[in-house]
Length: 472
Image (tube, rainbow, N blue to C red):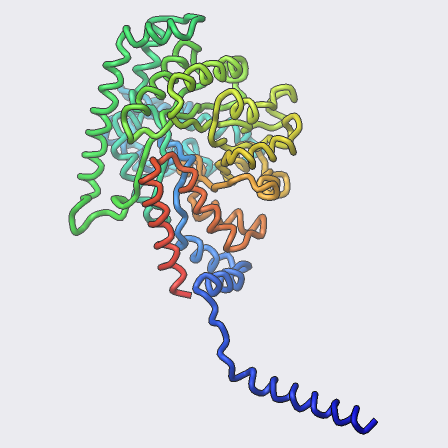
């Protein structure tokens, strides 16, 4: 018994010794990433501090960004004044002259009439949208026709604004959707007409003037980039930070126009992306639920499949699943899988109705297995579709490990930013700092940059995160 008590005493002595001396042992210091994650958790429930954290955080790229929709309404008003346009008071739209004092006053009138100025800002964005008066969907898509005339000839100004704002939001890369030929390809398609034989139609377009359009696109891009770099003073001591943002382009195909024009635009997108490295791929735009896009969806996928076989190296991302059961019948909710399997989409824009598609879990698993990234636009999905919070499929995508990157969609129309997209994601889905870094890195990893340039962009992002994390 005495031996047992002696052993107990000895054990206690050893334990006490270990407790005393362990405090003197060197502890492994927390890494900068761990310190940053701890700070992030400490401000998670403090919106103002969270906003500051997220604004300063590197965010990689914005892969889903419509150029004209990224511009704030105030810029369109300014350009309309400079361009001598008029305001149609009944539609809150810019129209060409002649103007008159009553129904079509000069755009400059808005600077003397605050009520008219407010009316224009509300018409051109979601700023003054009221759900009880008008659906977000209808108000959003109507904005483009209202401010459109002010954007004619202003592409360099748009690029300047978007790159500068992206730099302030700590983005390093943009893939911007616009139609660099100004509608020339669509016009050529209308002129030559429809041909059920895609091969023959392609030959007709090439023989009918497509080469001239392609050459002009590259010339116009040269001029646009020279103009914007001059305006941002790139290469000079006082250079705008936007000079450091790499902007590439996605040729946008208008899915709501006649099929002969859609094919002509699609072919132009494949051709220019094969020739000019500044155009890294193509996408289809316009409301997915409108009559023509619904009627011709399967035809569009056949076109995409045909052209993909001719241009297999050209990257494709497609708007798909920007739908809800209130917008279309249930049998129309198959666009995500069809866009991947028939349209050869490497990325999906929006993907909101994924759980309404046939065999949604199987689709999610296939997307994860095939590494098909989803460009998630939380603010846009909320104001246009009314889908947010627990009803949004972002948690489902994350659960099944589908690659995800946050995107702005139309930051000017939505009055949003990439910082706000991240904040909405954090506050709604309780994401961790590691989740945010993963999304930012995915925006570069799944970009359409060539492999060597992608590696440099990834290295740049890693360096930006290392610098960001040293402050915590």
